[in-house]
Length: 297
Image 1 (cartoon, helix red, strand yellow):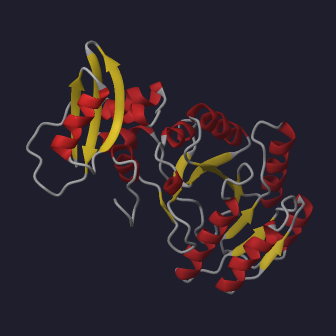
Image 2 (image 1 turned 90 degrees about the vertical axis):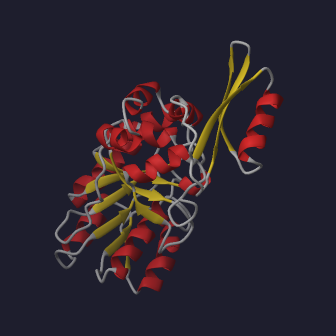
């Protein structure tokens, strides 16, 4: 990948320099005003040898482009990006092994919890593991029906338990050891009663909680939402809709609240739309906003 920094008196002049050297496919990472004019950082995916030096502040411009919070930005500028990401955040798989406690998926309405449950169930079935899938979503019209459409294709029965007591009963009757996925109703992370309900379901299930939050949201809002779910007991983070977001500062801000980065939603498919979150994936997206595993990465 070629990353270049251009300075000129006017934006049009700087853009002309970008097109002249990198061509029409160049991606503009950031622009800012400097003494005497403007500064533009641009990048181009290329397999050709890159014999020109990479500007030392190219990463800083990329982090500005993604609206990475200042505290996180400072940590990521200390060394090589992949190593800085690995040192700055926790990365851990969701607890879905045999004998693991039930996993509850919590998040605001429309964050992608139901599709995430379907994707995780698909991954388990493809690995020869039969999960128990439960919908606790009695608030959204058609919520359970949407998940049921996926479980039927997978040859699984969907259990509907829309109250903590019903959830406890369903789990008491299950066969032991297999993974359990629980799709919770959408919850407002800033509403105490909604978080109390999340905690009630988690207590009834004696399970762990993963917060499901969409990428592309304001970094401060993402951090506050993540912190709220962490207070309710969440330990992991699933970042959905990375294929719909070019700026991922909100994902890093959410992880900064202490949740372990677990999964990334990268596409619409049930079988291939969710991948483990890694520091390499994040580094790629920070450098190349359009890159996704299986696409341009």
